Image 1 (cartoon, helix red, strand yellow):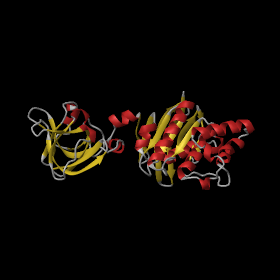
Image 2: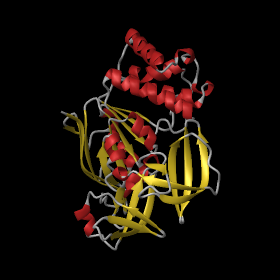
Image 3: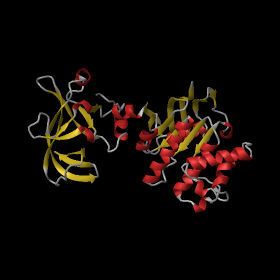
Image 4: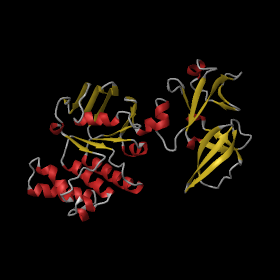
Length: 363
């Protein structure tokens, strides 16, 4: 049975259509992320699920019950906001126990649950401190603990890691994911950080301009992006995109003519590409699917080193290829001098082609 179902959900703010026809379902004990740029409708979608925003049209079902008109406080949903929203006059233990007290829990049961959350989030040393005595990362852990402690059918996390530094983010999301898996919680995370979503999610909803662009596993989104937007949004470092004219050689092989470079294209997808001959298309290739090559290798193309970034085991080489900037991810072996000439080769099993007008993926 599905835990949550959204059916053709719309949210309008006056003339602005913030969410347009969103439909997806999540399974019990699943971790789903909703990602997209600012203003894409992801937070509005979460707030409608929570009951903090009215639905313009459509349906939301939680545990098979339609909840459109159920008040937020009466929905079996726990929510952690981007802002900590802690009670400043209460200690950490007091902030954690408060949602239990208002729901009628008593002494020993409250103590047991509070101690469990303190341990899971490594907050025992702070239990008698007030929020003003805590760092931002510690306050965020308390805010998450307060959402997790109450017991709910569904947990909603709205940008809970956005104010944390890199190490705090990694630590806290690891703890949250462990709690979710060990306790079989159903969780929806809203985030603008696609790496966060890839690291934590069973499935991901990618939104743009109020609509779902793709819904699938992290692997599906990364390896089989549905369109140009998803290909550009998912993956770090981002995919390289090169625009050119699609032509066909005398041997029937397609290639992309881009300024002075002729990129041979894979033989697959020949029929679909035939209708695009002599038209502009966009080729995409991830930095890790480009390698350095010998000058005389078939398909190799020349580039001039624009910059090289050393990042430990990896290095990022930026080449100027007849005016096109191409980023290559390499296992670090040496430094590359600015202005040096090199030859590269695309892995044609990992090339993507897109219609520049519709964004549709062609290959």
